[in-house]
Length: 259
Image 1 (cartoon, rainbow, N blue to C red):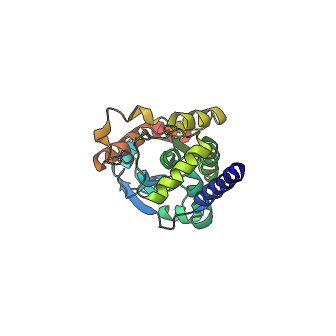
Image 2 (image 1 turned 90 degrees about the vertical axis):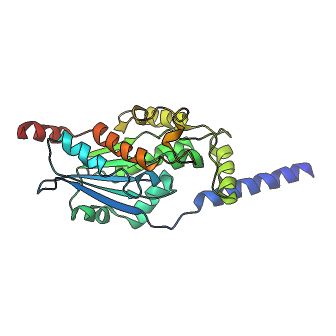
Image 3 (image 1 turned 90 degrees about the horizontal axis):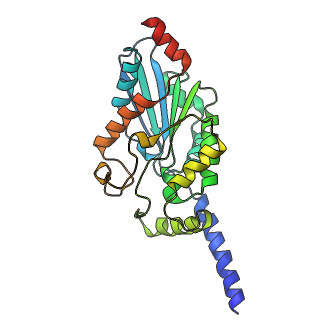
């Protein structure tokens, strides 16, 4: 009798895990734009990501920092944030509902000069597994293959160990996936990061640790949930991204010749 119960429990466990994995959110993304020194040849930046990219809280600091680096050149930056989405769901929504031409309409149909991808926080706290994080991060980069400069920000430091899901359903989902994909470990940020660096060492990655190197000791930078930055630190984050993001050789050459 016991082996039959174990088999039934295993089937239920796997079925539940697969069902939870395929569920999708349906709320629309948050879209915000910010312009600095706008002119006829503005540098266009598109930020795509999860909740950290929502509500325009990284603006206007991000475009201001880039404009300063470009000698006062006009900059227009737009963010599209999909709350609660891991990289798989983010990629799926882009493919199904937000083709590139829709996103580029934020720039009057012009292709952005730069795309910044802010993903990974939901991957780690939802425990989708390092393989899925790496696979769909690469797909997100490839989705913008027509853009000259695409950069991924390494997974931010958040409170993985003591994160509390908002409801019972989320808690069940997290615990199932944590054991299916992450060996029941709570803290996987470095595991996911190493997997990305190992599989795609040439990917253009901005190091988040140059902004905040760990959660412990910096709790006041975060909201009570330990996952989202306060508004003040999101604005600082925007300034950091604008100062740290790569600029293509073509842009750098244009700045040099203009000066």
